[in-house]
Length: 433
Image 1 (cartoon, helix red, strand yellow):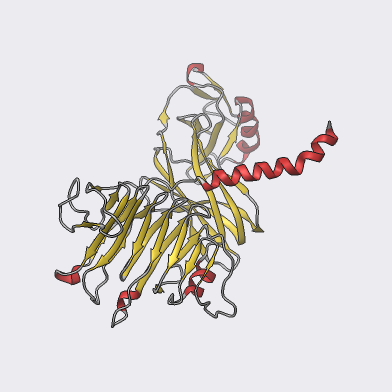
Image 2: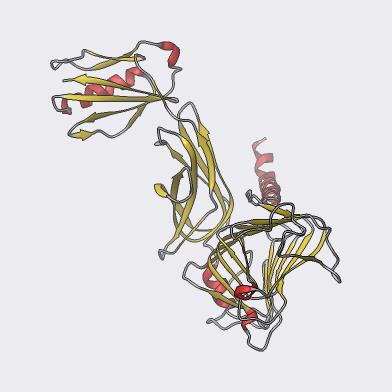
């Protein structure tokens, strides 16, 4: 039997890898919520449906500065900026293109003002959808996700002043969800405004510049460019993320009161490590809570996990992201995932510490109310006016008492608090030594 398995193992492995690649190919972008949708019927390639900068055609108000506009219905739309105060630039937070939508972003005149400013939001281009940037556009703090079968085009029609060719990127991440999610660059000048201005995740190609010499039109994996593309070497050789993400998710274990963050990469290049960052009740205060070493260089799937055991006692909406750091110190961020953590219930009288006060006798604890303890792991620490002990997690009451035997002699005299947490409960016991 072993010989049969050994013989067929390579074929089984190939089948598993093919199945996994199909799963990865079907991966979809994370949720990006629209604030308003365009309800007009789509047009044709020859006559795309005109999108107005007024309330006409929207199911609620015209998208505001932070608004995310959604388009649905198979066919073509053309959204034209131009005219008005400030050059008629349209500022929005993002876009969602449902399956089969083609949206052209353009402007009506050859102006020195950009057609669109897209700032602080997200863009999703779904299967068989196309987002076509036709005119000078500025993108800042935007996550762009292109699902399998989707396409984003950065193109322009050259004007006398050349400004219509500019596309600027500042703190922008483009996620290509598989080899059929594509980027196309036409006659465009790609301006990356900071060292971390643009990163691309999911590029399936290879380095396309020899000695930083720009190629003349071509294709590398799921990214293509024309003869008129400017800075394509800088874009692909310096802005592609060192890892290709497959997934990132988080789960909450209520019995052990911990969250598990899991992620996987399809390949890694010069990947030093991942820093796990957490923010509570918002995404404006991320702090590092852990670190996991990367694989360095690897062309196959790698799965990772991290346990966050020190969740805030008050609970709340917990947000996580990964800071991927390569060997030269450059870094980029993953998408953000979230989970809801319940607050801790404060109890009294579930546990007893004895003898209390103690005259030097060994301190112990025992369970008084068994209805409020379901054999969960116990996390405890000593809080003294002069010091706070490290947090220790044990599985049983006996294990807790074994630790107390070890640490009790080092506790200074006076009043201290024994803090015990289990499940979604916490109890503080005041002890005098």
